[in-house]
Amino acid sequence: MLQPHQPLQDAAVPSQRIHPRDQAGPWHSEAVCRRDEAGLFFAPSKEPTAARLSREEAAKRVCARCPVMVECREHALLQPEPYGVWGGLTAAERRVVLARRRRREAELQRATRVAAAG
Image (tube, rainbow, N blue to C red):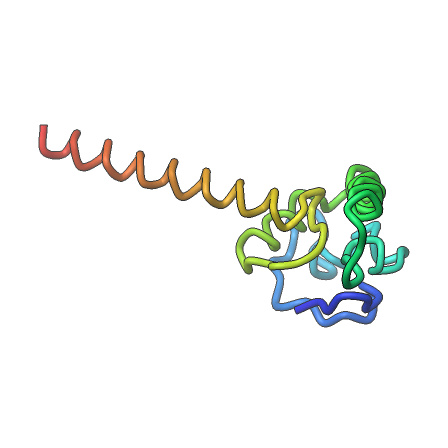
């Protein structure tokens, strides 16, 4: 797992899927953030709210131009990564996405059971 304040290029990233468009290496080898300090993506302790929001927006701008943003986001959702900006989403935003996915999955399972019983 990435540690706060650790440069991304030096961080150990858990096993990754190989993206079909790049069989030469894992998705994170193409990440734009590899050229930036991880401090942009991870909050320092006791960061004021205004500074945090500004830093997160700057991190999201880096993510927006990244060719592997979707792969990064899915990695962070599947792990799940508890800290930092991954794939253009903060930890709080990822929790919302995960909650929506769980609700959608539960609704699909209920619909499947109703259809099967019907």
